Image 1 (cartoon, rainbow, N blue to C red):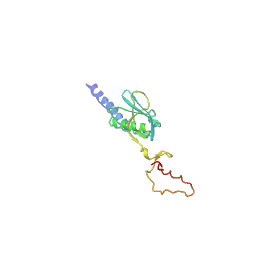
Image 2: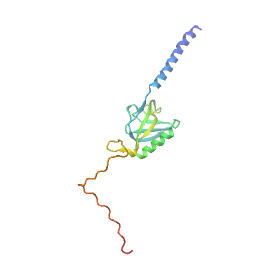
Image 3: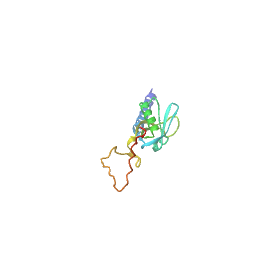
Image 4: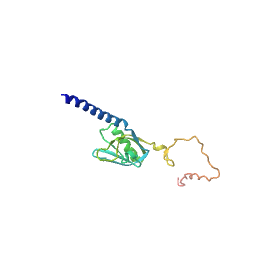
Length: 158
């Protein structure tokens, strides 16, 4: 009976430390956000969807994964497919504390995805730009302007 009393507090302390360690580890895991990049590949393996960008962050250098049981899976998958088909750039936020269990690689669990607005991308800077400009259009009088197309002619036969 005395040994049980001595061991029980020790077990309780060790159990409490393990619980605190797990909570602290999950609390310290910060989301990892990618830069805007195009999707290089979307694949399915063992029921999971795998996503690879042209530029993955170092903590998730083997891409991202998500599972159909995950919240917002359908919405994320629809956005991934739309971005992949339109070659749009996306930004992925992932959890680097939840690596893909199928392999021992840095493949993070995808939490959310955001697609860059394709209509407003400036190819020179590859970044968003304003949709319209208030600048007036200036025509240089010294530059020859293209001639207007010829008017349609009527057929002389009627």
